[in-house]
Amino acid sequence: MKYTAEDIRNALENHELTTYYQPQYDTINGQMKSAEALVRWIKPDGTVISPFFFIPVAEESDLIMEIDWYVTELVCKTLVKQNMMPQFPISVNFSRRHIQEELFAEKLSALVDKYDLLHPLIEVEITESAMIGDEEKILEWIVSIRNAGFKVAIDDFGSGLSSLQFVKDVPADVLKIDKSLLSRNCEDEKERIVLESIFTFAHRLNINTVAEGVETKEQLGFLRSCDCNRIQGYLYARPMPEEEYLKLCYEHKVVEEATDILQSQSAAGTMNLLINAIFRKYPLVIFINLTRNSFYMMAYDNFTTTSCPSAGIFDELIVHGASTMHPDDREIFDTTFNRTKLIEDYYSGIQTERLVTRQLGDDGIYRRVEIVDYFVKSNYSEDIIAITLCENLPDEQETIDEIEADIKKLSELNVTDIMTIIKKHLIMNN
Image (cartoon, rainbow, N blue to C red; front, side, top):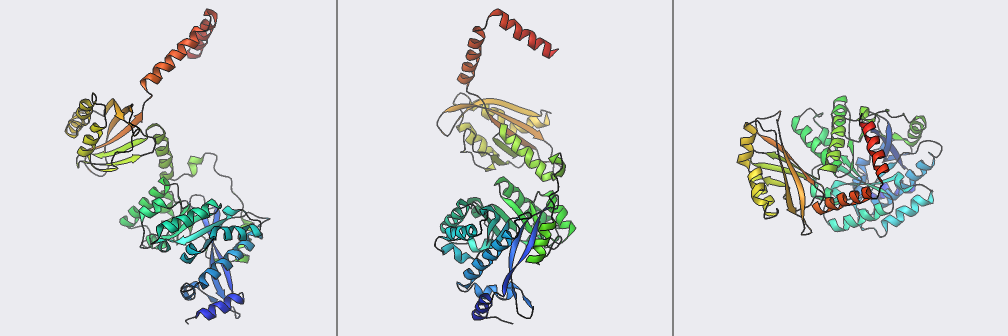
């Protein structure tokens, strides 16, 4: 049956529209973490109408905005009922039309404050397709929401209009992976590669992830290996009416986490911890395929220079790198990291190449940098692979100043104090 805008408005005024809730669970330990509010139309005879049959009609006018605000208030009332039980954040879908709504963030704040609720309990969810076009306005809208203390989620990511450039620029808190990316049950290699890539870049951008439409143990197993944060789908729970959802919240008990957090980490999660630790010491990491004359760079903002290209031809990277070195260091840099020479070193059994040089920083000052190439073996090809780790070193003058300061401190001590310190260290070392 096709419903008209008038039918839907009458249903709204008669309070026939209500909210169902679909819980979201921690991917690793299976604990409930949050939920999504979904609108349903329940007729007087008890018939439940899916939003598929009436939301598209409502979206043709500002009627959809009235429905969104109505649902948001129902969500607030549900959260109030959770005062004596665990309160879980709830995401609410908002139409693209709200982007043009005056003082949206202020209106949302006033509604939530009316029920004396914490703002992080409400997550504003907008579909990926709604973010196409007028990106400056959308960015301004999202920033205003987050500044008001609410979280923002991009829904249906990967449904066909994905823009990694836009995701990079949008300060979203959550990325919801569309169920279409799980359509082959995570058993197709291309599907797995795409999903792995999404979770990797989301983690690097500090964006939490939710996989939608999870229905099988195979999907769950793969998502765990990818370090997906939360899952939502029939495997754990279907959308449910408020009464059933509140009962689930009441029965939920927070399970104590494993004493050793690494025991509950996925392989991808542990690897991300390792990468973060590496970046503390090496703010610039380069992956090189010497056989194919290519490279890919992972860099943090605190390296001496940020002018290096992020990917491309390795020979060109060396030319660029040499141009940023101190004139007295350019020849040895080129000689050490010349691709032909590195390949020869690899076949001769050399495992690492190391060089300390002076590189021109973005501020126009030369600073000492240590560059180390490690040859590694790939499990997938015979290509010659190298990983470069670059570290900012202390300025030579700063090191001299530190030594002089230590000598000065030592000179201020008497002979007895110096001998006491020496004896102490001898005892400790023995």
